[in-house]
Image (cartoon, rainbow, N blue to C red; front, side):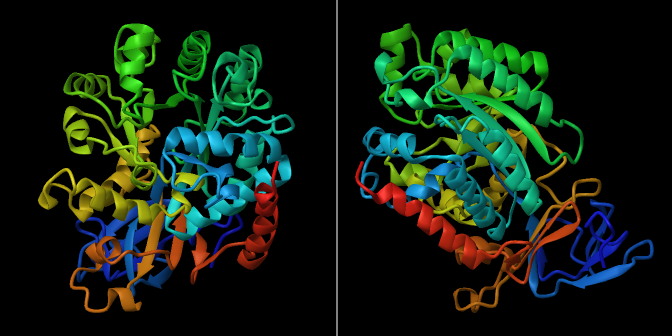
Length: 456
C-alpha cells in the first residue's frame, strides 16, 4: 500500500470521517504525493480516480498538532521531589544541578525519543524543542534530536538554545552547562547550514534561542539576532514568564522587557516568544505590529503559578498564538491534545466561554503554532498543504453520548490518536507508533531516570 519512500499511495481517499476540522471536507480528504490534493464535500466522491481508500467513519480528523515550545531532556525528572510544588525559580534551583550533573548523550537520546513518541501519540506531527543545556559531552545535542525525529518520521524545529553566563556571573546555570559566545555562534552556524531547510514540506528547520535576555549577555543576544538575519532562520526565547521580570527590566535597563528586546534587535517577524504572560497593552500592540508570535504554555503556567497569557488581546493585535507543552518537569507529560484542552480551560478564567471556543484552542494548537514556527505549509487541512493529519476515535467511556465529535476531543479530554499521518505516510497505526517498542522505551527511560533520583 506504500511506495518505496514510505509515503502514501499516489492518491489515497480518507473517506467520510466522523468529523473533520475543515469546511467542505465532510466526504473526506484526498492525499497525493504527501500533500492534500482535494477536499471532498459530503455525499460526493473525489473528482479524479483514487488508488486506495481509508474508511475514516470512526475517526475525527484534525490537522496534525504542532508543539511550539518544549524542553525534551527534562522528562528524565518528572515529578522529581526537588521540583514539585514550586514556582519557577525554586524549581530551577532544585533541578539545574541534577541536569548539569547527570545529563549525557545516552540518557538525552532516550529523553528525546520519549518526548517525541509521547507527542506523536497525542496527534502531534511537528515539534520544536528549545535546548540550551549543553552539558560537557552533550555538544552534539542538536544532531541527536534530528536523528530521533527522523526515526519517528516527525517534523522538527531544532531550537539551538544557548547560555554564556553561569553561577560565577550571578546566574543559576552551573558552570558546566554554559558555553563561550564563539562556541555558541560557531555551532549555531553549523546547525543552520546542516539542518535549516526552509523549503515547502521540509522535515527539519532551525531557530536560534538564547535562554532569556536576563540570563545571557547582551553580546550574545545581539550576535544571535544578527546571525539569524544573515542565515535566514527563526528566533526564539523565554520572556515575561514571571511578573518579577517587569520591575527587573526597568531596574536593569530603564525600560520594560519588550522595549529592551527591541533595543537588542529582536522585535521582528522572525521571533516567537515562549510564555509572554506579563505584558501591558502597549507591549501587546508592539508585538502585533511587528508580527511576533507567542507560544502559550497553559499547563506549565498553571503548574508553576506563572500567570495567564493575554491570548485574545495578543491575537487581536496581530500575533500568532501557538501552544507548547514546555518542560516535562513543569508539565510532567508531553501531550499536545492535552495542551489544547488546558488552553481552552485556562483562558476561560480570563475570557467569556464564547470567546475561547474549542475551535479556537484547536486552531492555536495547529495553525497558530505553525505560524509561530514560520510555516504556512502545515497546520490546516486545505488543498496544497502537507498531508499531516491526526485521527482520533471517540468510542471510549469518556466520549459516550457526545453530540459534537470534534468538540468532544477537547471537552471530553482526548488523550491519544488512533492514527497519525505525516507527509502522507502512516506514522501511527492502531495507536502504535511505527518502529517503536513502547514497552522497551518505557523500561530504558525509567532506568535512565532513576539516576536523577540519586542524591548528589
